[in-house]
Image 1: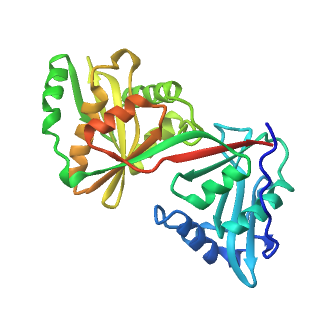
Image 2 (image 1 turned 90 degrees about the vertical axis):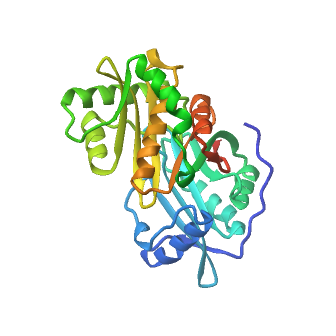
Length: 308
């Protein structure tokens, strides 16, 4: 990889390791950096004894004005570290150089994730020699205006062909949880690879416990076999889609559209007003499904990569 264009440093900042006393300031910096997309609380930021993590802050005078967090990206990308920056953009370069000087051993890549309209961090990753490696999308649906009627004819055709949809009971037999888990693993295997959209696989028992604890799962059966599934996680007035997948032998029939449409109709009936979803831009089938259902995509999320 050629050397990146040099980026200017700013020596007006004092750098030091994060301290618990910084938690309030850092929480506000990260919340502001997310433009309100997520809200962070001070208790989410604490000093770490993990030898693979690095947490730094930049001060201008006595004020914490920027922060850097470095940690392993996850088991799906065991060779990668994730770099998160927030706050005053002029402090990103000295924070980054300090992180580079103290990288933990055994990793070959740095990854950074930001939304395309977060201009200060997009500019920094570009100037620092990262490449725009992957793109992901997020989308939202106004459930108060969602009308399932246009999908009724599709549901009727599928019913005639032997497909039936239901909400999976928390007390479903073990055979159903086995089938749901097998379908879940097939979906992970077949989905386009993207570090930010490739989940760490759950065990069969963890999947069952997650659904029972915090989700609503919907399945389509064919001859009593589970051949499609989608899961919703309620968050107040919003629901978030989790892992819609169709068995390879039953794809191309509209099962995902019909199933997700019924799940959204259930969410609306439960009083939820908005639905969210997302995924890699490489997953064109799910992009088409969500477009049919009326989701409106927002700015892309970009994963930047640099070899170290």
